[in-house]
Every structure is written in C-alpha cells, then in structure tokens.
Image (cartoon, rainbow, N blue to C red; front, side, top):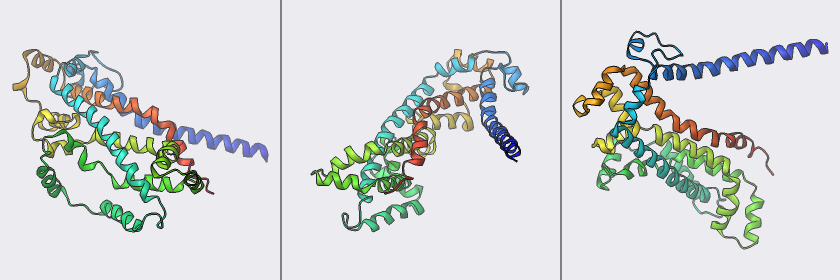
Length: 295
C-alpha cells in the first residue's frame, strides 16, 4: 500500500513537472524566436526560415539601433522616466497609505478617504479632461507630463494600506509609548518591515513607466520628447521616415529585414526589465507569507 502511494506520488510530481516545463517553454520560445530573427539576414527572415537559431548571422540591426540618435534619445527619456517616476510614485503611495492604515479614532474621516480612493479606481474623468488639466498646467511636451498624471495609482495605495494594516499593532503602540511620532513610526518601523510590498509595487511602477506608450503619444506632440515605447510605436505602426536617415543608415536598412530591425528593437527594450526583475523577485515570496501570521 505504501509502495503504491509512493509510486503514485512520483508519477504525479513527474506529470506536474512536465506541465510546468511545457508552460515555461511556451513562454521562452517566442523570445528565442525573436532573438534569432534579430540576428538573421534579410533573405532568411523574409522567407520565414528562421525558427530558434539565427540564419545568416549578423548584427546589422543592433548596429543600426546603437547608431540611431532618435532611438538612444528616447531610451534615455524612458530611463529617466522610470528613475524619477518610481521614486515619486512610491513616496506618494507610502505617504497616502500610512494615514489610511490608521484606526478611525486616529484619523477622522478615514472611511471617507478610503472610499474616495476606491471611487477613483472605478471611475475617472477620461482622456479629454486629463489633457485639459495637463494643458492648463503647461505640462504638454514637458517631461513631468509623463510622471505626474499617474503618480498616485489608487490600486497600489490600497495594497500598501492593507499591508501596513497587516503589521502587528503592538509595534506602533510600543513606539508611541517610547515617544515616537508618526514620521518615526513610518520610517523606522513600518518601512523596514514593508520591503516586500515596496519592492512589488516598485516593480509594478517600473513596468508601467517602461511599457507605457500612450501617455507620450497624446501628451507629447514633439517627437524629441517621446519615451522609447512611443518611439517604437511610431516605427512599428507609422513606419520609418526615410527622409531623416543618413546615407549610411539607409544602406544598412536596405541590407536587413524590417522584421529583424523590429525584433532587435523589442529585444533591447526587454533587457532593462530582465535586469531589474531578479533583484526584486526574491521579495515576492516574502510578500506572500509575511502577512499570514496575525496576532
């Protein structure tokens, strides 16, 4: 009987392993195909002969990207946007979530403010009112137009608030007995214990700022102010403006496939997120379990 259970357990684990491995391959194979296309020559790509290994290996697409000033300028704007946007967003999220995590007797009208944030998740003014507000503040074609309109995501505030409320109340009570104020409790008690939540929400913010193309599309009328994703959108769906290319760039483009160029651009945009994610990934497991034990 015991032997049969052991055999059944091993078979079940083997089946689960096969399913998970298959799921992982389904996620990785498109990236492998994209990478192979980016390094393949024009003829092989145009004939759809490239699968998961480059054919006619060359780096012309990446050379064109690295010599494209517009691409590099948009890349720099996106890096600045991520750096500034994540810092601003996390500061405002923490400062909003902490008072909302207090008890009703400590913050009068707490329930009203919580529902105020929830209301903004369900309803918003729309794009036209947003553009009017940004325009009235003279932020159109301004870098801060990429940061401020979405600096306080209400959903993230609610997540951080619930995380704060899940921390043992005895910690803040002990700090108050020792004479600590709200700033001390927030900076020295809550934040050190909230690294999993901070890391998770920071990653959400990084992914949003890095992947968002639409904000730059309708708040930036000048292409020199476009972040990387907006620039790529113009290249993928509007097309390359050959009148702005140098003779060398035009010659390079003639030697490579549009698919190879687009694949290379996509691969370059993926790299920063792939670099950041491993450093934050270890906090996700802690974030799943840290709030499971209550007093």
